[in-house]
Image 1 (cartoon, rainbow, N blue to C red):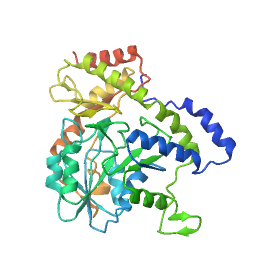
Image 2 (cartoon, rainbow, N blue to C red):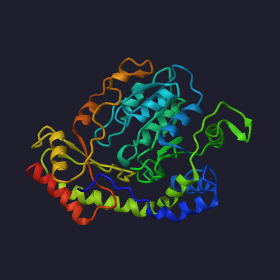
Image 3 (cartoon, rainbow, N blue to C red):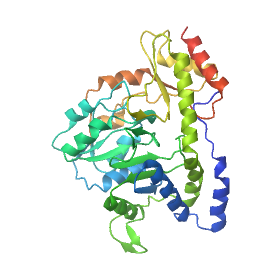
Image 4 (spheres, rainbow, N blue to C red):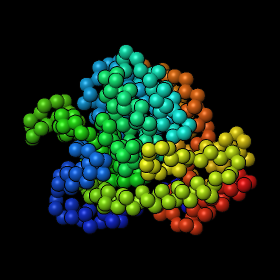
Length: 365
């Protein structure tokens, strides 16, 4: 089986052993080292490490001091953590439909969703490519709104030379399957000195110094053990990204003429880091998305459906007072057609050829 993703953290062993021998295994100097390296990757002054990508989103909303009923406009095509974080922080989620070109929120739909209760715009940089920040960032600025980037899948991505996580508060996931992992973990990036300070206090039970409490805080800390896993990966991020880009290019070349298959695009001014290589299986394809997925699995080619439904289209959200559902026809269509193929850096040339060949075989191309 060619897996949809591979977790490789073997390079972390020396640093993990160093942490174990030091006796400092909670948040300590290794976390600071990881934060400094991550800030450099994101092109920002501050990186605040936390214990998950969801925590990064929750904490970012919490430090913006939203009141009950204040709204966050975000994408309906995302992992459920985006929505859960908004609700956990006590805000209300409103949704803007996506563009089929990049799977990210459509700026026109975002503009239409802004209302008197809107306080935050939260674009989701999906699959490794950033949303259209040339239009979304001005929308936030012109309307006096905070900007929180859900950049969980976009570490190292850029738009017009600006890195993901550099526009406002950037939220990254370090979960096991991400391009950079600490097994579990997250990072918040910002150039705002005051917000960075508040985030560091918030994550440490509201303490600035031991037993000096300033706010009602939380335990959002990352451990030195987790940081030790992530540091070697940050050091080789450029190499890993280049391999993902080569694999994506080979996939696109091999699948370019397959009827009914829409391939992912790299849009102007954007650097794609290919967390996922996601195609759309249209109605004119030889089989539908679900059948293609099943046949690929049967033939030993891993794949994933990210995501099978609009994020709020579940019973637990239908009557939730914090969820304002809306008509999102592009998202609904994409959710029925999207299929991700292996693009990870551990693929060999023969693996890529096999993925291409198997897709073409199933679709009769």
